[in-house]
Image (cartoon, rainbow, N blue to C red; front, side, top):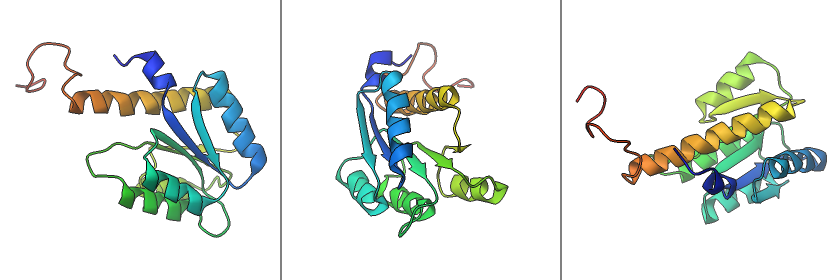
Length: 154
């Protein structure tokens, strides 16, 4: 199991062109105990932040001027090593199934429609961070709980 305190120290990047949405997501994440939340209203600057140092979770709006969330998903996918799990949680007002499918096809790990249920959002963010930390622990060889290291069939 991953240490809850380590998860609370995760680096979270929130990208949305609406200041009210940034403030809401930051407030919810702070209430959940996350200490390292960065917000970015400019999607191009968000891509640069990922390039400078990958966060542990990206919370991303799809509908933004200039560079939309789909382009950000594509750019982040290109910047992320293939063996790294960087979860992206998309928040969008677009309720069309095509929007969700496209976001997931481009690498989003989860999609929520706005207005968000803040309790559910906190749970989903926590689940994605736990997944990232578990995968990292397994990759480092610390995730073994005993038994055969070759897997369940081994």
